[in-house]
Image (cartoon, rainbow over all chains, first blue to last red):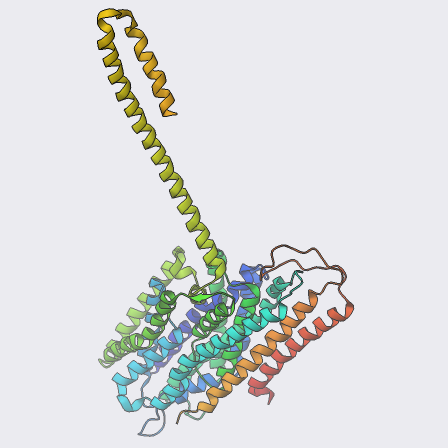
Length: 457
Length: 88
């Protein structure tokens, strides 16, 4: 079954590519939006830093290859076969494509782990999974890291505004944080490489171990590191063009000083976690930071509806991708034909994804990055003022319209009244005058008209 | 056994390093905004103000601003040095 191993490697690299493709916006959207960097430069910088980041360490890769799936009780490799890893990667890719199509917030990392859990459960039962490793290195970091990043971003934002505040009314120069953001964004791109590229390395290493190509105690082979680094860098670079084309749609009210604080917290959290082998979702950490820093600005509030929707997407990813992973694993149990059917389904999904990406459909779902979406979960006084002003304008307009309608109605009523009055008067007068002075008949309507005009105005 | 000390380490490192970075960069940017003569005072004292008064900043402020930026670079490079096994 060597070809299954090759298939898994190819699929895993594809997964890595889509990960980079998806996540460029997280790091580089701000410096492009603030014009601190030219789009071309920003995207190239992000790609290079992802490449470099992937080479920095292998702790996360070892977590994936060693920490999640138990050793085979029969000795040697791991408790699952390459076919089930294939099912896991396929499930992760499918889940990513689906959430991307529907614009749901999701985490590609959790999709990968979910797929692996579901597949291993079907393929080898409860005993195949190292539940402790899963809790310690994946689940707890998934909950704690965004909170840590958010809390830090909150403090950092408060601090940065306090340090740069001026009381004498002179300009405080906070616009210079645009330049500082070049560096903080670069750090985010670097940290992305250290965490996300390594998950793919871990999967490829895991499949090599399960096929018996390398032993469990070997590290990550160098060619695996190099290909994963390249795949994520190319993905980042090609994903960038999408942002450039659609620039201006996903820009939120994140200010340079605030953005710097948020990005610094993101980068430090991810780098520290990567060093300890925590495989976390970089998107979730970045989202946590953006929300935390939004709350650090004066007078901001959380929009619980938006925040809840994002959190639901996060919670859903793991069980949903586990279910898909389990389904594919069941398919794989059929034997080689199952693997072939699975490949066909996966290729079809990817083809659909690329056709739609090519068509360049622009809507909130695929243009805005998940992190930019997270920023929407905080409402700022500026936004509220703007909304209130818009509401006031609308109300004033409605009032004016209503007043106008009222005036018109009044005028109409008056007109009708005057007409009726004058008619009655004319009639009465005509009745009175008729026998005596028939020639006044022509004069009467004119005076009635005059009277009517006077009343109407 | 859940290794809580690892999480504590991530928390402490994140808070300390982030606040240190933000402080030195904020300080540097604040120092670059030091004017000697009172510059044009805008009536809007918004939290975001792009114009920086260039009317003769004291040399000492510029120097310390750059010291702050160098400190920022040092913190970042030290952090990366810490996590790359190849350097140890």
